[in-house]
View 1 (tube, rainbow, N blue to C red):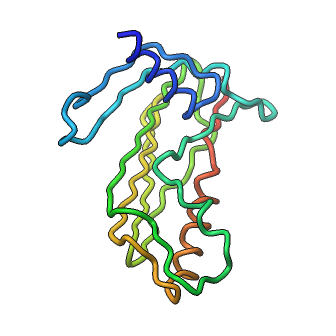
View 2 (view 1 turned 135 degrees about the vertical axis):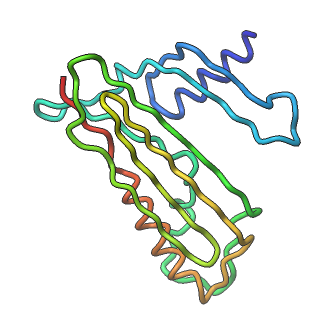
Length: 168
């Protein structure tokens, strides 16, 4: 149990520096043939950054980690991006009574022959959900396809910088 709690806290720290795990649940932990699913209830009070009269919370994007791999402007050899995979990363923000959302990230969808990235954002009352889905279908990006792929990755990484802004 202690090891499990350490894993939950480590994951929480990757998502939000300074987050505290209230409760963690792991699904399919012992079955490597199934996708691992973690559910974490976190206290992220200390993570909010003040922006004038509002507060800003980041939106973690662990499912999208290619932005550091497209630094070159052009390539002469293919770029390996790994095995085809599908990731889904969802965050639900619940505000305390009396607080309201001032700004939420925008939903978007970006497509390339080797990858699709989709972010959907929904709000209902004092709760908002942000879901990031990434589907990679190729192992490699050909050198001639790299500029278009690089553009998609960079524009997606920029879009993922937006956060959740709320006021109390």
